[in-house]
Amino acid sequence: MPELPEVETVRRGLKNLIIDKKITHVSFDWPKGFPNAPFDVSQFLIGSHITDVRRRAKVLMIDLDTDYSLVVHLKMTGQLVYRGDENFGAGHPNDSLIGELPDRSTRVTIDFSDETKLFFNDQRKFGWMRLMPTIEIPNIDFMRRVGPEPLEADFTATVLFDRLQRRKSSSIKAALLDQTVLAGIGNIYADEALWGAKIHPETKVGNISQASIKKLYTEIVSVLQLSIEKGGSTDRNYVNAEGKKGSYIDFARVFRRENLPCPRCGTTIIKTRVAGRGTHICPKCQVVKND
Ligand SMILES: [Zn+2]
Picture 1 (cartoon, protein in one colour):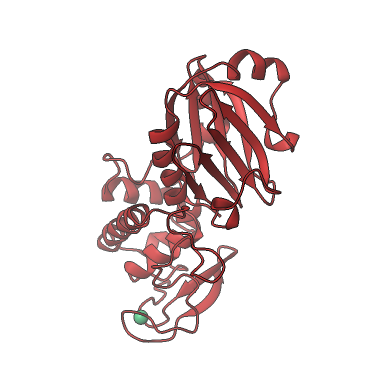
Picture 2 (cartoon, rainbow, N blue to C red):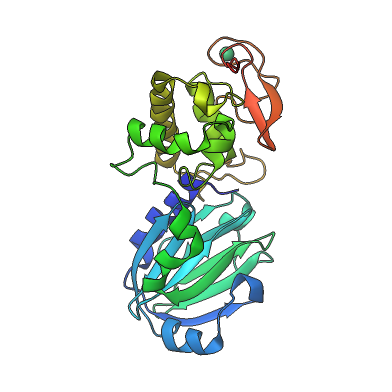
């Protein structure tokens, strides 16, 4: 599933390419992926110019000069691909990032007046692109409830500590995955950050010292930043067939590395289940400290 770094990579890449472009046509093959009234589409999307591309948690917002926005959720297998003077694609890493488009995974095609195109591809059809007044976005239930952005300057170790206190009796992994505690942390980055901070994912939040939370804070920020610097999952780091397949996080230290040695101590990494999710740990570096 595209996580925060992939979505941020989509945002940065698209922002450079589609700002000021005029939308002339839109087509879609999956109504649930584009649940918009034809009237709204003709009034507020067709003929509009793009003014900004923003992100909140894993949700993208493409703002239009009609005061409407296209709100995009990539869900499990979504990706956005721009084809034109320059090519760019990011999100779920599969062949559609680099192949000929539209293809079988293309759900929405947006045409710009300069004959360039934006494709919303989504193999498993859980993602969507919703047109709505920009001013209403903060009122969406999810936006009201979602926690702070981990990459914003006002997110500090103290903020993380305070946010976690609302889930004192939960496991730290469940608390990190709770989007109302913190925005955009998914399974991969939770495992990576907990390994970095040497905290077992089953440890109860209330049993973790402030010093360990501080270390966890540093790990969350650095693992997200590293992933964004590496380009998330894009057409640029995606190599087809015979080459290496681009993955979400090929520099992972524990995630999907079960049976391989821990890069810190050499102990074999194991896969277990915490908070209902497949979880990767080093059994030596990460010891549960529950009473
Ligand atoms: Zn280890």
